[in-house]
Length: 373
Ligand SMILES: *Cc1c(COP(=O)(O)O)cnc(C)c1O
Image (cartoon, rainbow, N blue to C red; front, side, top):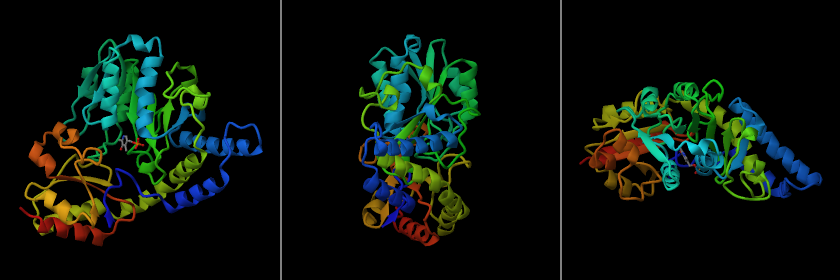
């Protein structure tokens, strides 16, 4: 099996497996417990909290552990807007049309609570430019949410520029960084980010753990996502998942190195060159300046359904995006950049692990060639 779906979930790194094994053996105590083992757990949890904070130039007190980016996005938008008496008077938010689906679902919940939502369209290259975000802002805009790197295209939004505009207009800025953590430099101060979402399983960590950064968290009023016994500054109740957090820490420490090695392979360019020499008709979606582990390929002259069917035991590939591939709708990201239904169906999102090889790419291109219409 060749795994081309790392943007949906990255295989667990060997260092993470070791950390998890150790943690499952030894990290059984509750980090809230007032005894030696409890305090040991707390130290592990707080060490990872500090590493995440360092990684994005924030303070550890501004990091809350969550179950993943979906929950982080819930806290970032719902808990912040519904919990703050001043903010909740403003009833408008701005989000992009190419966000992860969970953002739209959160927006629908807010609409039911009297908010209105403006959707910013990307340009034809899948980028949300700062100017269009500015145009969507209103007097009563409470928050802007624009993802850092798009999970279907790999495109990188100019979040520092958008952050500056939000700062100038005193509007909170949230960015979903599930795809960019450990792959792009993140500095929440330099980029004027107020809230940011992360997930461990996109960088070789375990599923079910993530984090949210909230600027000046201690000074804010937030509505808890889970009402509990005061864990995670009262925002996210429940016993803190110390073993998973330890795995998250190992992923954070090791993934960047693997990714650097991956970048040197120039796999994306290799694939494009192979497609060119094989004579396949193809379009690469997005602009040139994308993250190299994702490529969105439209194959107008290829029977993509047949390709996927015939190779279902060989390749793990996403048609559109993993979250929507079992649905009948075309991907909202692809339609937002102007693809019609038919072209969206003929689009593959190929996302590489750091271990991908040239011969795996050769095999993929061969299979694509054979599925010509
Ligand atoms: C994967 C992903 C999510 C969801 O993350 P979970 O940790 O699985 O909840 C959210 N946003 C983006 C951009 C993603 O790629």
